[in-house]
Length: 152
Ligand SMILES: [Zn+2]
Image 1: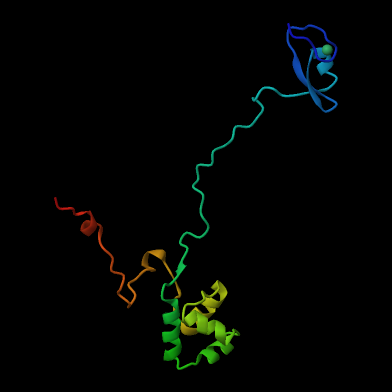
Image 2: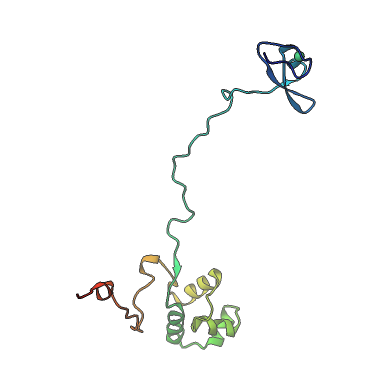
């Protein structure tokens, strides 16, 4: 038979009671002195499963075009502007624009959008079309078929 941890009385059933910060197993009368701790989970709200698929921010996150430097350079040359002129009009350092054109530096989103607006180009593209073939066609690699074919 369990006994009350407070008064030591043997009782049929003990209650969990919070008495002065400690959780004790106490008899009914002792438990009344303290705050009864809910042992049943009936009160606890069932966790609602959120079935709604979590939207991951923007639906289509565009990526910087793989040839962004070229795009900017071409657009700039079309406008017959020097790197310096572009830099000045965008309030950027000449070296920054230069680096971006040579793709040594990825423009920050804010700068990229400034360039987009200035030249009417799109530097951010959907990932699906981001890897369009660049002019340097030296991405030749052995296909799986070539490698896997083993003659006996
Ligand atoms: Zn007791």
